[in-house]
Image 1: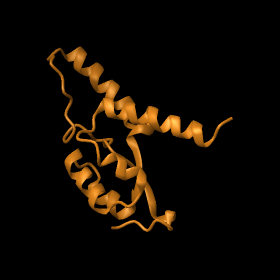
Image 2: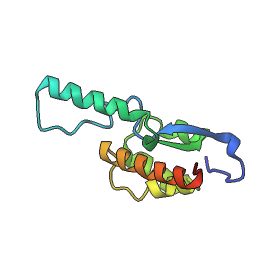
Image 3: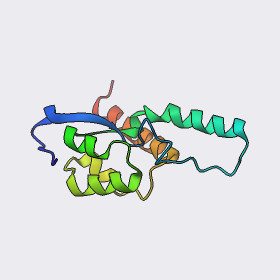
Length: 117
């Protein structure tokens, strides 16, 4: 499952917080109000495909971590991934909506720096 840095053809896009997040990535909410919870679910669903929640992994590593929780994904990335973009992720203690937003901003800054107008 280890990544060969020179071979990018074997990489696939992975959602860090998976598209099926409900089981392993519960919402943290103080409210039991169904309308408020539905709003939180909607906000989270809108973040799932956000650039801040995406990374690249080998197909084998992607399949092995799939819908796992953050602790499992973090451990696998730390142990197996050689890509710098994933090394930075392993420094995060948690992965939640706010981390996705922060990473989106950071990636956007890097993109603008790399490809200025």
